[in-house]
Length: 187
Length: 130
Image (cartoon, rainbow over all chains, first blue to last red; front, side):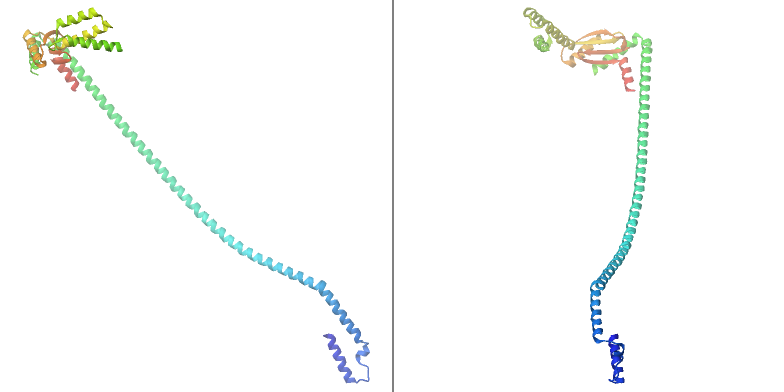
């Protein structure tokens, strides 16, 4: 573009000054063939540079850009996942704490129930043993009374027999025998 | 064991042959003893012991043993014999046996039956009831 502007300016100056005087372009020794050759050389050089340097460099930059974007996206995703994970972890910790508190509460209740049951059974056993001991004492008391009554009766009968053996006369015995005979024959 | 059982059975049969009208007959007993002496059955001693026991039991049923403490008159014995004869429906004779442990009163045994009206018996009943 710069070259075309430069050529247009030279042509305009040539038109003003007249065709008889050499133009500025001729003064500077600019040859259209060289300029064209240099333009073609520049284009070839540009094509070679574009083919082997600019295009790979651009591709590499685009690849890096995409990698950077992917990395940023991955980091963003990781951030979101981390937040979700932290939230989930917090929820899990909260639930675990709730479950732990529940288990502890149930354990306390179970321990209390067990202790109450043990106390109740111990009290029942104690009451049962007391009742059995009371019954044993009453039975022993009754047995002792029965033994004492039997022994007293035996002593009374023995004493009475001894007294009667000494005190009863033959007449008394004969009279008793007659009464006994009547009782036996009438029975 | 079997021999003893056979001896018992023979003795029981001989005892039944010794009864006349439900009473032991002296003549029949003599006949049975003569039979045993003559024929000599197996295990004669066991047969004789069993026969003697059956006869003794039967004779005891015909005898009232009156145990007494103190004097017992003949009229009392006759009264008891008559009462037991009437009760058992067979002639029963009364015999006496002194027993001072009765203190006073009578105890009459007829076979396995015992009738008692004595001071000792009443005291025993009193002690048992306490």
